[in-house]
Image (tube, rainbow, N blue to C red; front, top):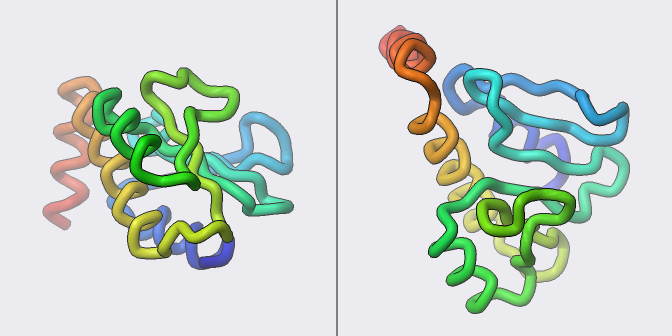
Length: 120
């Protein structure tokens, strides 16, 4: 997977947006104004994804390429090292899980807006 494919996948999720709030080199993907994924634009060596704490620990035990979230709350975020054996399908699935986790935690009004966007 390359940065363009990852970007297209993230922006293909309903109401997903992108921005660079941490500087020009860090690409951040959000839903409802909340981050669900971020990566370095220059290297695309890893991606940080939100994760249920129990599942996060489980994934770290199962895969060498899944680490506690770099510069993130290590209980709720994983860093997935790319180009080290992480299959594209798993990265996409974990990105979708991150998106769903964040979307489910949005305030009621934001969830309703997201549901309306899905109906269109």
